[in-house]
Length: 320
Image (cartoon, rainbow, N blue to C red; front, side):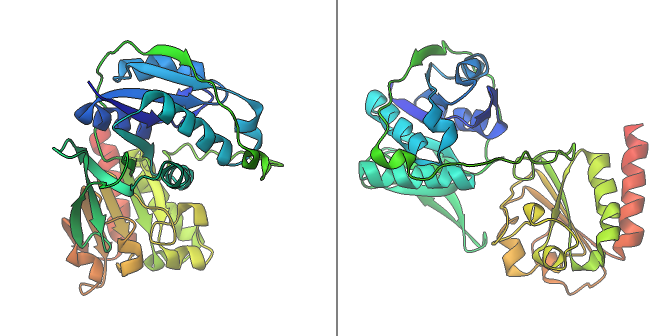
């Protein structure tokens, strides 16, 4: 059976959920071969094998940690040449999309970004995307070369499918450009105890209607009761009420959770572009004419400062 190369997103050997979703999609079109790079790469083999990886290619070198994306592109290209896959799948993070784009240029292939589904086709893998702020759904395939496809988090279920997961060391020759941009320092992100925004199954977001940084405690309380991530609209971020790292929208992060709760968010097209592929959308807004109500599954017309605390209390009561 043809092989599909999957780029692994991990932190010191801890594989992140989007990679396990990629393995589910990869099995639809071939046998997954995973590529894990950097410190802890070999430690990813167990969980990758549990989720369908027939082989796990690993590489570690100082260049992978000390410089920006080019060394990772060099390694991915080396894996591509060693495997000759029918497709290359990469998580749709900011870094992932840059790596995928650089690889596509190098190997002369077409690229599809932000796919939300993948299936086998007679002429190659067919990817589903949401276009124009999710107003349209498109199905596309690459017509030149080996498809390089980035996939949004929460696009597929994580499914166990035990496979061999044989670990193989990958030889990588780094290009001259690999050491062009050096990482001089890193600052660990402060942990909130909540899920990563782009990977969360539930996201609770606040907008202009929250009316102040201190009032985001209401949004956070609901999120914590649900085990959710907290998001914010651009208006709330621009006002300084919440960090930019939590912004959902065209100029922020794109999310696709199972449940998205928008509180005090009008639903401008910029925000919709970042969350409209959510599986179930709930809006709470006192303006019955707010555009957000045009796309929701459930809408509550009311004051969020009355509705959200009641919802939080109800969730806590049901959880016992």
